[in-house]
Amino acid sequence: RAADLGLSVALIERHEKLGGVCLNVGCIPSKALLHAARVITEADEMAERGISFGKAKIDPDALREWKQAVVDRLTGGLATLARQRKVEVIRGEARLSGPRTVVVGGREVSFASASLAAGSSAAMLPELPDDPRIVSSTGALALPGVPKRLLVIGGGIIGLEMAAVYDALGSRVTVVELLDQLIPGCDADLAKPLHRRVSERYEAIHLGTKVESLRPQKGGVKAQLSGGQSATFDLVLVAVGRRPNGHEVGAQAAGVEVDPAGFIPVDRQLRTNVPWIHAIGDLVGGPMLAHKASHEGKVAAEAIAGDTAAEFDPRTVPSVAYTDPEVAWMGLSEVEAREQGVEYEKAVFPWAASGRALTLGRDDGLTKLIFEPASRRLLGAGITGVGAGELIAETVHALEMGADAEDLALTIHPHPTLTETVGFGAEMELGTITDLLAPRRR
Ligand code: NAD
Image 1 (cartoon, rainbow, N blue to C red):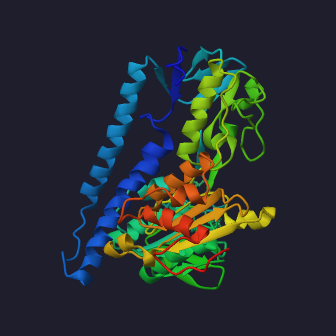
Image 2 (cartoon, rainbow, N blue to C red):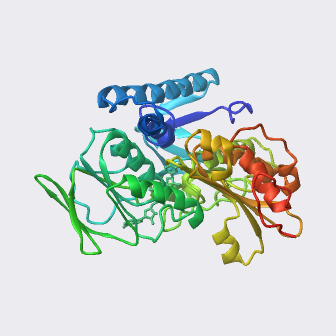
Image 3 (cartoon, rainbow, N blue to C red):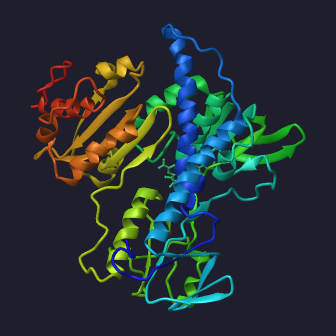
């Protein structure tokens, strides 16, 4: 964006390929593996419906190669885009060395403006033994093979996405989550269908539980859980959150403020306390999501190019767990509404009443819409079910446009689709639904 606005741009990257965590060791490789997982489980489930393919034969080397080919195609595309825009790509790890200079591989580069986008790193538990069988998401995505027994520490998004992959590949999965719900960041009713499905498939799910210790042994890593149970695993994935890399960019030398947790405070133009240095993405707080970071990056570039009106001020940043079923939410959640004392009405359309969901053999979903009672303006939404990550986009658009229940209900959704569930939810709010018998609200 900065290059398109006429600025002369250098991009410094320590990884051999462009694209950051999301593209190289995050969103993209995980989604390739999750697609493979979905194909395996869908094929298995068709056996009850008259079509049997037999047990999947898994070639981890070929799967790894395919996943890497997907990543390489995208990272290669970024290198081409940078070249086409005459963005100079400098390889190496950068540290600010003064208010207008950065040092990379012994070379000093000076700048008029900078945008810090150094991201975050996987948080690890204290006193973890150093053992190749204890890995972060990067290690799990490398697909070191298919462990017989996998322990996932952290029932958040990364933990559950990787659990879905290894479960489909044939591992027996145990999940240990500190809090009392899977994906504690979303409303409980959205997490429930996921919990129900994985509790039938996985070896164990321990909520409200801590891993007291991990002891590497010859036959596996022995985990001692806070409830007194212990078990031995072939692979342990630690997915307990991520920490911003704010302390790793030499911020002090430039006078850029960093808080003790490693976040860099910024204003709505993503400007740090040093007016010509901006920061974006996981470094600045808020949800650690690629789509938030890329929007912020554009705003920072526009602000640097002199656009005084550019600001990052979305109504919401949607969240999606690409688990099976997927869990997606945006805007105001019920938990937040209760915490903030916001009055709301909700309409929940169960996928058991969706023809499309039944034809997919997956009625284990729900579409929940949250409205402002007086105006019936959409305030938030949550969707659990196959493809929820795609479906949530309609509600994000509706929220951005200030849509109300009538706008959604009078929008003709194609039949039969899962998108209809958004329209049906709005009809439930209005009391005009005929697809099920819902109590009239007023
Ligand atoms: P997370 O915050 O989503 O989940 C971490 C989980 O670990 C939480 O549920 C937490 O309660 C639990 N936990 C913390 N300490 C624990 C302990 N000692 N024992 C057991 N459980 C413990 O973080 P994540 O899953 O590691 O993901 C990191 C970041 O990356 C998040 O911001 C996430 O949103 C982002 N991410 C997003 C996507 C996506 O958009 N699909 C995918 C992957 C990662």
